[in-house]
Image (cartoon, rainbow, N blue to C red; front, side, top):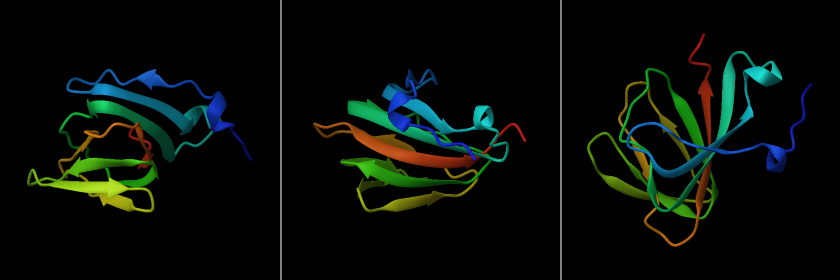
Length: 115
């Protein structure tokens, strides 16, 4: 068993093209001997967003703090907030945005794309 203290894990600026004011930390991943799944924590600062993108794998998202916007594959925007979870299908285009005045935080659990 591996227990991490999330507040001790360093976050890094997301360098993906189209990302703005997004930080990520890997809470559980290969360095913890989790070879099948990865749990990531994202923080999007006010005015920030992820790229409008897709993956070839599914992922689940749990909103942890405040609220944000998810853009679906049709370009529709949906407000999301604490107490909600999302499922993104493989190949489904999506984007997270934060047009609000407080940091927007969420967990994203994915299969290890290296497998």
